[in-house]
Image (cartoon, rainbow, N blue to C red):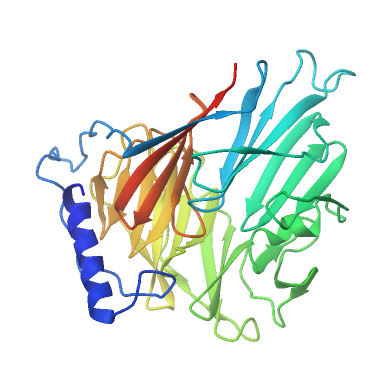
Length: 382
């Protein structure tokens, strides 16, 4: 284990030992103190940290995949530490709307964290645009302009999915959670997906610019953004009634506002960006369940590639200046080998990052700031 993250893991292990329960979806209190940065982490007088050199992977999973020459890695997605999908395409040169613009695609699946990959039958292997979306055992393929295909058994079987009025099928919408702000047409509403029907909650929240909803701890939280200002509300009774929440004013107007909840313990954050999406975001953390407290971060990097909620009041951060975590108002550069790419938290708490530059994928196995970094590499059989 490395640096302060090792000490944090020891705290978690002690909690597990005392409680007699295994680490899992059971919510546990956050550690009372985030350990300080390692002694070799130097800071200048302004608080900005000198980037640490990236650590090597703890493990590299390199697999030869049944893909012929001429195909390139188009998209790769994981739903948890074990299950993932990849799409390779071979697109001819020329305009995308030309008569010969259809690209053949090859679809692959892994069930062992990228150690091995098997081909799946693609229901529409030739299309102008291929996209893949996955959550749990559900897989959705877009083969534009020909339509959508869905699978509920991790790609073993597919069926065509009719699009709704907004051009996407219901199963695609349902990938993004039980409660959603929906839909693209008309006035946004908070609702719940029940079977294949979207049912608005009994009372809609009076939140300007309503854009996101999250369900955690038996409550619904919503966020909104209008004229650069954030707004929020919560409901204890699944939308029967709503109460406004105090959101500390931002330092500058926002263009984007995200409401994110940790998969491990349900901790919630608001993450706001201005016009410069690479600039360090403005942050709010749920405080006492009724207000959003502004979080200012000492030593924060000037630019970020991605921010993900990881539980215990912490955020994972990637960027050109290094990768690490934010905890208790301090940025800790841990030297994670993620570069400046995006980062996302999967359903089991695993961190996922994909690099377009070399086609590799990173899986961060563990909890909080203690991660084993697995590099997944797919090599074509050329």
